[in-house]
Length: 207
Image 1 (cartoon, one colour):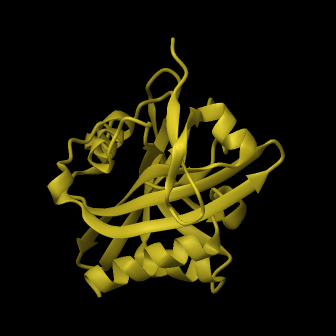
Image 2: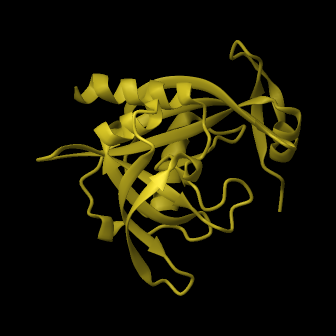
């Protein structure tokens, strides 16, 4: 199997070449990703969806994360990123149904892993029931939703816990209902600035 090649960029967003994925993260090279946040409007206000990362993931296993996301390979365009939604969540979404929030550069540095992303961020207004999500278990262990206003307070430090509801898929395929309070340590540690730009973008769209 050929190693994935990612396009690389300088800090200004100019393409500099391509490199294997492991090298990109080892050297901290800027690269492109696709992020899609699901939201839903109901009588009580706006909801936002988070995926529960699989325990088999090499990075941030078992933490809550962006609804669907993935790397863009060197020969892919941002339109190709919509495939991540189908692959990870089992939900068919057309690119023209997505609302763009722009490119958000950010980085996460941990021991032996430097993630510098130019994230192409989108919002999708979801009309599917949770029962219709079929997560790719190697990548996604479950899906939860939270009140958007509560999520904002959680990210800004106004609340120490976030109430989420959804499900987790066991190894045998059984779905376990989730209804719990989670702490910030259970969220993938994207920069708060990244989360705030997403939140403020969603507020512009749905405010």
